[in-house]
Image (tube, rainbow, N blue to C red; front, top):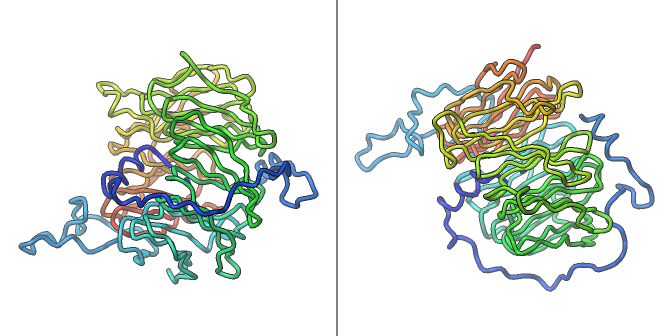
Amino acid sequence: MHVLGIFRQHRQYHMGETNTPPVSPRDQEPNDSDEEIVGNQNEDEDFEVIEVYEEDIENEEGAEGEDGENEAEGEDGMEELDIPDDALLTFKQHTGSVFCCSFEPKESKLVVSGGEDDKAYVWNITDGQVLFECTNHQDSVTCALFSHDGCYVATADMAGLIQVWKVATKSVVWTFETGDLTWIDWHPASHILFAGTDAGDTWMWKIPSGDCKTLPGHGERNECGKILPDGRRIAVGYVDGSVKVFDLKTLAVLQHSNGGQTHTNGVSSIDCHRDNNLIVSGSFDSTAKLYNSQTGKLLCTLSCVGVGGSEDQSSVEAVSFCPETSVNLVVTGTLSGKISCWDIPTQIERQSYDQSAGVVKLVWHPKHTHLLFSAGLDGVVRLIDSRSGTLVREYRGHTADLLDISVSFDGYHLVTSSDDQTCRVFEVNVDH
């Protein structure tokens, strides 16, 4: 919903630290009850998340210059008149950069988006009509996600205010204020919300009761997190380059990479393999590391520096395991635009594609699991065949950097958010 290093650099550049108001925590205190808040959607029944996982396996007008001659240029200097617009629909309700967007997961008729204008909207992809506005935010909304069943939508801003809305009633059912947030995510099979903070802690709340537990940090900023497919553990990456694995019931630290096993710079992205045994972390140090999630052992380090490239240019901004069950593949995407497909058993780069623009996010097609969407800093979404490393097609229309991308559950549509103050909905149309 998912927070990448490149997104963080972007928002600091555009908004600055002064745009984040002082933290004003509420009197609500974490519930220290021994009640287990992880493990079941129905509170008196156990669930097996892995079964769920396997089944479900513009601003179009240019910025006008003082002399009126820049009407054909977008916010980042892209010439609008030269950019074809492949979108079915353009959502223009935001008045600032749109930092996040996400499909409702069951029917994918609704999208939630949040932006620099301190607003979040839930809207329909058919006609762009707003179902409701998520009000009360006083800072840029950087995270917005639906729960696994689409019942709830969570919105979070840079100041640390988190709100959860019940979609059916369009009303707030829970709020919380914490320190500056870095990411939020929902549990894949329960109404449990997670959040990472600058202070390093990972919060988890049962919604809508608000029962709370905290996974303690170690004094380093919490950069990213990913719940393992078993639903019982979470992997968290930190600014010091380390990775922790927590047990969600006992809150125990099961693994913590240290010494020579850590990255030499912050962890920018993290993913977990479908078999629950592998974790991959990407870093600003231009490497990706594979760990055994059971033992914490470092299995290998993948160097993602391109030919003639530097560490700064090759910062790994996105990592993702291929969901195809017959393929042992992990993909990395860098700030230089290089996308590499690595064979896990041999740690050899099997295929690569250079999109010549920084990678913001990588998302697999839910049906054709060899196909990968890549959102780029040039405003273009590319669909890439991971088997051959070739481009299948491009989706154009944005006039500035892409900041987020989400794909519908059936793979028929994708939605993007951008620095050009718009979201766009595209029809995928893949016949393979």
